[in-house]
Structures are given as C-alpha cells and as structure tokens.
Length: 403
Image: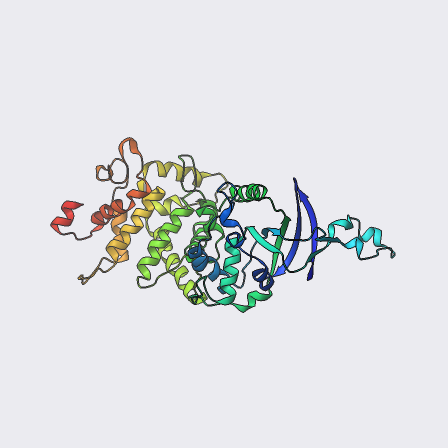
C-alpha cells in the first residue's frame, strides 16, 4: 500500500487526480489496454485504444529518452481500475491548520489537496501516452518489447525522472473511449515547418535556422510559398531543401539522421558547409545579390525591389532556387569515370551569363508551364538536369536525347 501526494480537480463531468511518479514506479504500475482482463471481449465500439506502433517507439521515442539530456514528456492521462471507493484522502482530514497565518497562507480549498491511497492491486491504464510508456520501459531496460537489445542502449538515469500523471477513476468503456478520441483528435501534430523552427535534434533544421540569420530572418517566410506581393527572399522549407543538397554533396559518405543530433564538432562542419555555400550564392550570383540589397531599409525600397524582381527573374522563385542549387552540385561534383568537373567559380560565372527571364524560351515547360505558372516541387529534379546541361554538364547523345 502507498499514498501518493495529489491534487484533485474537475473538468466537465470528469473528476481527476494529478500526481507525480518516478519513471521506475510508472513502468511498474502501468499496464497497456490490451493487458486489461476482458479487453478481447470488448466490441469495436467499446474499444478505445490503438495498437502500439513498436517500430516508432524503438526507432524514435526510446532513443530520444536514452540520448537526450534535455528530454521531457508531457502528462500521461490514465484511468484507474480496481481502486477502493475511498481512494481519495483530503489533506484536511489528516492535518490541522489552525496556527497563526494559516488562513492567508492556505487561501484555497484544502479538500482538493491530499493523497491517493493505493492498496497495490489497482490497474493504471494510459489512454493518452501508451507509446511514451512503452518508450520508457525500453529506454530503462535497453531492450525492445521482444527483449532484444536496443541499438541505442539504455539509460538508468531515467529511473529517477518525475513523470506527471493525470488519473481518472472511470470503469465505463464508453466514457473512456470518448476521452481518448477527444484528446487525440484535438492534439494536432506540429507541421514540418514548425519542426524546422523548433527541432534541436534535426541537423538540417539546425543548419536552416543558422542560414536564416545569414539571409536575415526578416527575408525568410516561414510558410512554403511566396505570393506575388510578399517581400521575402525565400522560404524556410526551401532553405532546408537546399541545405539537404549541400550536406549530401559535401558529405556523400555520411548517413545524416533527422532525429539524431551529431557531435558538436560534426554539427559545426555541417553548419560551415551550408554557410560557405550560401555566402557564395548570395554574394556572387548577381540577381540574388541585387535582390538582397538593403534588407532592412526603413522605406521598404528593398522590399518593393524584391517583389518586382521576383515577378521577372525565375531564379528568384523559391522552387527554382532549389533546382538551381541542385544543378550546381551536378556540374561541380566529380562523377565516377570523370577526371575533372567544373569549378565553383566557373559555374557561378555561367549562372550570371544565362538569361533567367520568363521571356527566355529555354525555360518554358521546364521552369514554368502555360500561363507562366512555376513548376511544382515534383518538377525540381527535371529542372535541375536541364539547368545543369545549360551550365555545361557533359551528356552522351542518348542522355541528351532523353533529356
């Protein structure tokens, strides 16, 4: 038997108790819904929980717990079965607060502060957090659900971590299903763009935020597209796509994982590679350089110029920037069987010599379609191959014919 310090609250028709548990105790007390006696006998309408996606737990959540010193989880929402009717013991039943100053100090309802009395035979079942619960078990033991060793190992420091648990006393499957559905329906996942802005593990996102500082944050739009009147130079997703091209070209033999931050030394190399590339393009490509002049002009002269230039110059369109950079690496990277490739300086010179206006018939059907509509993301690969050819990529007769 144990007593857990807790607070009591009510939301709608649901009474709940908020407690903290050590991760060790949580993994010992919790059970998954499928382990509840009679679960298999419930109808599809009565069941409320999804199957645990163990691949996701093993490859993503557990490694986060094992490797990240800044790890943190939100509250687990649970129901408790087989609890006594007198589960709740208010603090006012076990303490006397008649001493001087207690009224000012304790100006709240003492009946909502107290203890949960657990006799040991209760079943605490997560209705929001079963994947996190499975990840805690894996991360502590260093083994997956089949008792096979995790590639990331284990972390015994987790045993002493405090987990917030919200417990509802509820034995009715219909009510539990309702809570589960509402909690998960309105828990909107973060968007890819939001992940770029916040991720501390994704090396591409870290590089992308760094490059925003070089271009200046003011000139980077955090959504995926630029409208005709937008003054920004490019978008956050396009910077990230270009950084992916940079790192793939500069570190061809490395498998860079989006969910695993590399060492400080390696991360510094990635950032330097991206910074060198962007500094080259924004200072040496004439159209880019002109568009970026006076980024913080109070009169908005630079902003108007960027909008006007983007209306005419194809290489100021975000998706074409991606295609151009992809083409750059096609012609500057030495391919198998080749003895030489174009230098960065020579390719930049050729970029500046090319006519990038809509009026150049070379780009129709490649960079833009009928009605001057810019290609979609899916056309980047073909566009980069055509641009690379015009920058000097050597193609065989068959390759040229196919292109």
